[in-house]
Length: 322
Image 1 (cartoon, rainbow, N blue to C red):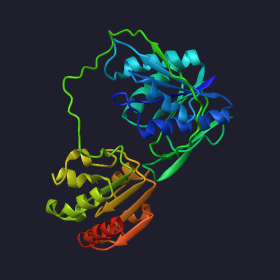
Image 2 (cartoon, one colour):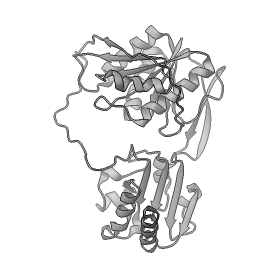
Image 3 (tube, rainbow, N blue to C red):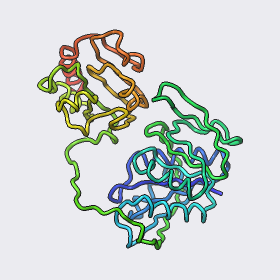
């Protein structure tokens, strides 16, 4: 029996969220008195794979196939299911990101496993297997009991602290054969964003709403983000108006993010927006309406005109950097 954790790689490299998953899986394995097996699919060099062992992975498997060069949820599910059976895995853990949301339901059907989606803490108990998760767009929480023999969890990003636990595990590369007939994913073009911090990777996000009043007023917000090495984001009305690109839209219908710090400037805090950012560790709100809903979700708030406050924040950060 083991805990299997799927560690996604990006062009052969791991990001923080992969190490966070392994740390979480290690803690779950400790509760179950078992071991952690980390699985990565696609070619990753041994040195990079070895990093998974720093966070508690006691066995590291790298599954490769010449027949699979792009992410395909159906093919990946088959590989993960086979390895889960071979390892006797009773708990399988994914990140609650786009890939995890594509793989977990498919794997659930294959293994007749119950899913705890978007969990944000360790299980409350092993018998019965009970997990904690946010619900109602982050406005409430639930205790979910999973009764199936195999359990699948997707972990909310940035919800578990990294804990070093070196194991010295030696990566094992296995060649897998897949039936390529059901593989339908074809990449026709690839445009990679450069020179800008991705929203989903950012530790700090500075976001603007209609309180910015005009697309011409975005300069100080972008400057603040640059000084903090942060990503920029916006509310849906801003992207709908064309003030900012749609890729920056956060919320229920945009990107779901969980940075360490989310600075909301001129954002009222509608339920749909908070659903996408409520998992942030700290929220700082700047709004001229003291009754704005955003203040209920924020740990820190400033009531005032964002266009007057932003330049002062920029000057303050510049002063700290001198």
